[in-house]
Length: 353
Image 1 (cartoon, helix red, strand yellow):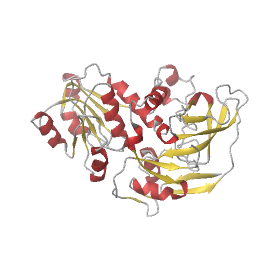
Image 2: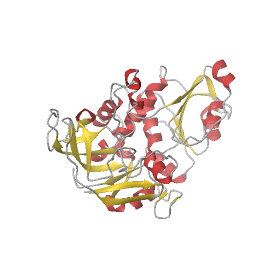
Image 3: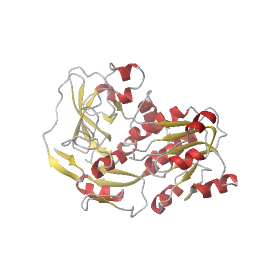
Image 4: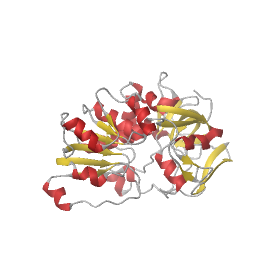
């Protein structure tokens, strides 16, 4: 079969590799239908997020069809359409036992697309407990957004939202920004969005929740929303990693800043303000507290309209064009500005439906 292999920064290529087979009793081989491009994939390829092990197959936002099952598998059979939860956890280490399985101490060697062969490939070797069977009306493409939505739900959970009449913002109109503004809306919070890239703006403008406004500048947003550029807000999700200091200075007492960007960037924060104003600076990553199952249910039930966020789908052989669409120019080994409106870009690995 074919697999997109990472060797080092900017050195990725499709290679012929051996087909997979079940080894452990709870193993399930999934023939891949589609896999989404994540910011993590881009960070690995560009070297901005140097965590992947050389020789690993990239990709983790995926769906497919069960083609083999281990001797102990009882919940699935060959032919089942499934979505894959790529966040392995052992259930026994200290982090798992203290409620943080997303930081399982066995993560090295088990993290799909980073240290364990991922899903930009013809097949993926999964565990039975990390699969969900798709309902007939849910497409492979829609279901592939279960993992990023589950990460979003993890972050929104951490915000501990208890009031809906709050001032809220989302920075960045990429896939995570769009998922966050919709997830907040589902919790009863109408947030505004800030995005500077015109191509992101063009896409987001027609796909925001009702009454959510889009601005190209944070000061403009504060003036339009509240009549004053020094207005304070209660909650902000920063998917860009570029606005920590600005947002921190605009938090109201009790305000919360959630950062979900994997960016190598440092910020200076006033420790006095954190205590004196009861501020919270929160980080979030991966699935937690059944968020993967909850995310799939929200997609299944149409609560979050993920189909609207899928802007382009490329065939596997055109993976370089797919990554170029999100600003990752593999051929030229450089990051480039977006050239067209886009949000979530998928790669179609096969014709499985």
